[in-house]
Length: 308
Image (cartoon, rainbow, N blue to C red; front, side, top):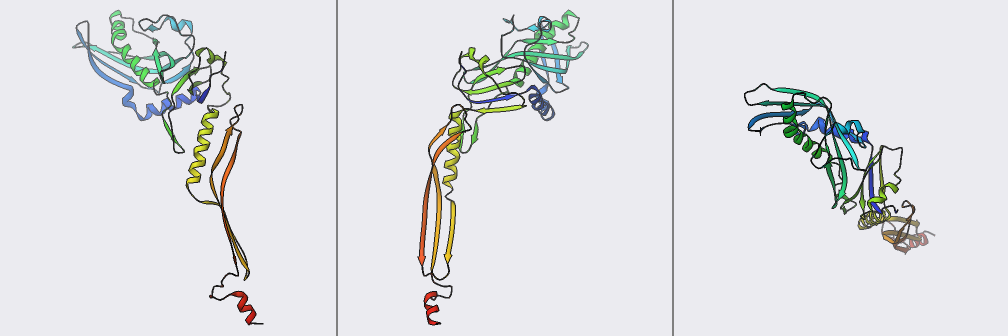
C-alpha cells in the first residue's frame, strides 16, 4: 500500500469549518431560506424553510440508530466505508400548506449525511439522505416532507458542502490550478489534497499532522516551483543586493554592486521539503577611480602640492 504523491494537502477540523459556516449564515441568509409553490398529487402546496441557526459539520458517519431512522435517497441502503460527513442543521424551520388549507409548521434538528469524493478533478458530494429529529406523525404531512421539502433540504446541504473546495490561486506570479485528487475524512480532519491521482486504497496510509486546527502540506515539486518563481520575481526587480561605495580622500574611490539573477540547480529534499539547496547567480559590477576630482573641480593631489 503506497502513500499517494500529493502536491498540496489542506486539512481543517470541524470547528474551523463551523466558523466558516457561521460566517456564511451571518452574511448570506438568503442562501439558507426559501419559499415556493409546488404541486403534490394534484394539490398545490406553498412551502417555506429557513435555517434559523448556523449549520455545523460533523466528521464521520452517523451511528447505526440514526442511520436506521434516516430517510435514504433512492438507491442508497448502506453507508460508504470512508469519506462520510454530516451537515447538521440545529434549527431548521419548515412550513407547508395546501392551497386554501391550514398551514403547518415544524422546527427541529435535521442532519444530512453525505460522502465526499475527489472525482474528475473536483470534490463530488454524494448526498445519502435526511434525518429529522421529530418528523411529523401525520402520514400526509410526512409524504409532503419526503417528496417536496426533503429534496430541497438535500439541495441546500449539497450546495453548502460543495463550497469545500480549493479554488485556483495566483501566488508569486504563478497560476496554481489546485485540482483535487483526494478527499479524506478522519475523526479530526477533513482533508482536500491535490497532486497525482492516488490509489483510493492508499488513503488510510496517509499520516496527517495532529494538534492544529488547520494544516497545509506542500510537496517537493510545488515547493520548487514556488521558490523558483519567488527567485525570478526578485531578480526581475533589478535592485542591487550589494551597493557599496568606499573612498580614500584625494586618492581613490571604489564602487561595488551585486545583482541577483536567480537560482541555479534548485533542489528540494524529497524527505524534507523544507530543506532546499541551490546555486546563486550573482552579477557583479564595480569600478575604481584614482585621484577623484574634488567638489570644487580641482585635483586634490595638485592642490596639496601647490600648498607645500
